Length: 575
Image (cartoon, rainbow, N blue to C red; front, side, top):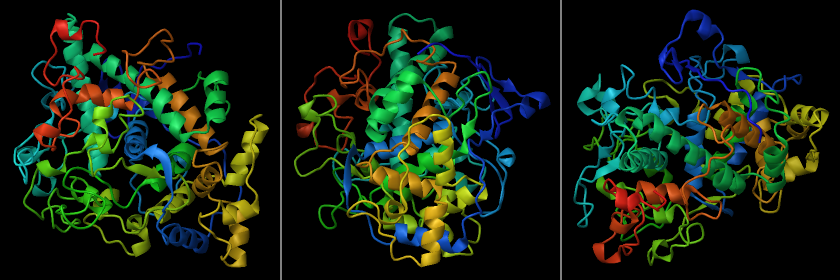
């Protein structure tokens, strides 16, 4: 792709700061022209009724999904991690308050640049403590010994996010992760992924230092290396798993037709992406995971507690309190202030190192299984009908209606709050822009695919409302269900084009550096998520499944050393 217009600075609304080559406070005029949300299609249809949104939300969580897709479950939470890299609505209004797009406040840069990990960099006034003494590597955290087993009984350095502890302003914040975006500690899966990217960056720092990069250039050089590998992975590993191949090919080869086709204007975040299309991942969530040696998706011995979705919320600092048997909605309950060692991730159960990296030693251990995400469709697992209060900032407030804790209801109401266009209006706009779209008919919207969510039993008035002006998020999920579990003409294009624009908007961009290539990796796409993990964790010392007994650890194959590499270790290797 040809190099396009670049933008060197982006505004962080929640920090009143310009992020770029040099971070500094924004002037009032710069704030006025800062990055904002945008809307591709203005809504003309009447707002969705309370009755329809309630009926949809209740139906979407009424029957737990049982159909798996073909995507390893770790990609569910990688998707959430990417969302937090791209968009953060910091608008302060009560739930179900109507807003215009211009009233929304965006707290993230519009670029796939990992600002959720790096923040404002080591030289920002509030950031030095997040970086190690070399000013380039990120500070990572230590778990709390929890047993049983010889490994879990230890405090494991580098296996938890850094936490505020004594730095906290109040006791309720002591368990909070000390990272730029606290949403990346909403559940244990995304917290461990955030940690993986911190460790991947630290590996790149050590790799470049071993190659002689001067210390003054080390952070920026390693950050660029990390960001470009991240972008490559998203294009060649993540997107192909979730977006229809023909749609993705069209965007990559022919460019954007819907999301800011011209790059001459300031990059914005379309609400069609942030409020609808990119919320597809909620349907991929399982109610339980075969998480590690101690916590699996089956009740009974040898587990202490299931690797349930509720426990993944519980063992986080934002939604839970890191403590077993606790009141998940009470941030002060429980004894642990760091992640218990027996809850660290077993990456071999979340990503497929056999199919994607050809490393049979890193298959799940006997008795374990590779977790597979649920198919993308309109069904959400039933625990999402009652979210922990901390997962949506509800601690300390009164939730008047229990339905407000239903994730499907929150998503649907959010679309109405911001005036999101109906799916039919979006289809018409795509068609007008010359994009080939197969629109779903009324029966497809109601009945879906075999084994899917059947809404033909809705009252006639609600069926008419749903098929005349379908909420865009629901339509995207139904479209994927009818497309074999991949985002289709509408959802897939919105997601792929927004990713394209976000990579183009980054000052570190593989689109604007077309000759750049990743370090040699094992993934068929040249470099994938498994390669990030192989560098972030030392497979030769069992860090990808750290709780396993020593005898069961994979042999030393020279992958991803944990310690700082020497020049001889990095010479001729992939890093």
